[in-house]
Length: 365
Image (cartoon, rainbow, N blue to C red; front, side, top):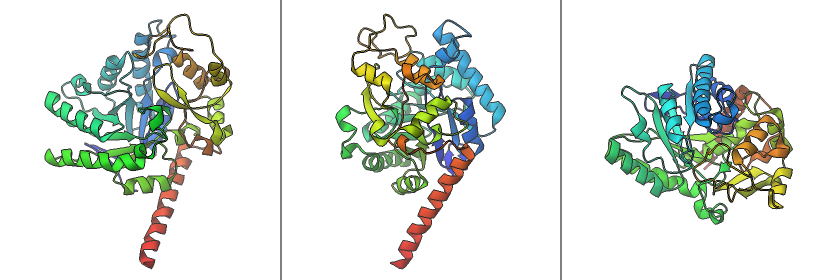
């Protein structure tokens, strides 16, 4: 595997651990990945619930929680630590400002168009910015807007395909449409980004995400032009993952048929593991009386069958009867809980074996 260079950051392995909320990727998982040469990512989603003992105000608790998680990560690693901040979050601006103030190495931002992300950078800040997109059009728009409005070029761009876990930036009918597959989208986006980068004398690394599970997957997707990959689902069943054992076990015990597309209260489709809670939702789970946190801009309590942040928090803590686990399309393939070091070693071995196989096949021709 080649290294991944994002500005002056150099990851020994081209593997970014995807940000997973609520609480699934905090300082424990992120620092473990960074220590193995990848890019570890803390999710800022739901920190106000996780750290609500610090403050009854959701936003105040979120800011304190992000500072705490970044500081804990720094105590455990000298590697690259990033933060995922969703545009759809009501405290998006405060989470971005906090990540920059705490000197996070990089901010990944999707679930909307982060058109104003560079506006939060402060003088002397070294935090890199990487938007998450699902089309060449979105990549082009962000590049052009950032350059025109802020004289800033994205430090990297993440392309997330429809096989990812959690909220998806696709219409329901696009999720199974091959025209929107990562393999189809990636070359188009790479071409667009390369054209923009060449015109402005810079290289913008393109990171592929969504459904990448093995070292062979990494090899194949990098052959299509990706500079690196982002993986979330594969890291859930690691010892260092911050989720409860029950959450991790739900992956191991899931069948392929259990992985389903749901309609999230935030107005987007999402991919999750079917369970009794989601079954009750289908049968008409009672609506919440009020919104306790106002965490997502697009969540309408008058039409929501449940509070999504509490459902995800309950799952994170292991109470899956009152919540559910978001998961990528390959979550059912998980067989055991292993260390991040073991996982990274396996990914490298899988990559190398497939690379050798391809080289031998070429020699035979």
